Image (cartoon, rainbow, N blue to C red):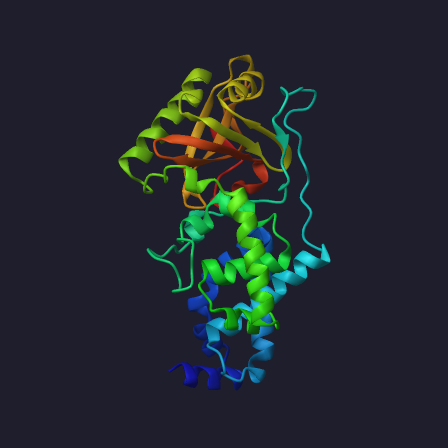
Length: 335
């Protein structure tokens, strides 16, 4: 059937081409997202991949599977985007005009980052191949995607192709027009960097999605935000929890600093929020809405994504309003 569709697509049958590529489109977009850290850039890279595949199908020699051939094209397009610096530039919004936030722990290195909506994901129950080292859910988590952005582009591609997708070293060498020795060397360096950046081995795993533990944590956090209860929020955090807010570079670690930040910024002047639940990167997330003091309208103030460990929150990541359309969330809500 695949051989027949390839022949028809080569003859100009657009429907055959669509059927040939459709089973791979979502996983290719996720692959581009892991490499680029942006849903919008991943979509651009995917469209470039599909166009290049259509134009290059006549040169496809069937020495590798269609899936591997598509990953070769997609990876090349992403690496070109990373090297050219031509990616879409986002406006860097400050926290609040004329508001001085408390002293921070450090400045974050990854400002170019967007959350990935769960409704675009198809997360399998197991890894993609026998060579993979990361479970599918871990490999789409915000912590993993953030850490990957700190790798050089080629190391980034090698690690994702080998340790996430499970391609053999020789396949990765073919995808990257490289050698197995070069791939092995790049993978060794990438693994060492990620081992330093990801603290997952020292933490309890997160509760299963939509489990009773996760639901209880979500309910408690929602109640605390709706009541403007700083202590209630802090009680849900681990002792070493992080607060991050790309593209703002400020990062805060620990309950004490989290309490200072939420008191001075999030819940200043007795503010209370309505949270609208969604999911991002396989994790609980919320659209945050604040009451307009002069009208019966709630205005969006960003998207909050939770990283969980056991029954606690180890990272709260707040994104600005620019990501809300990805989740089908409006800028305003009626009171």
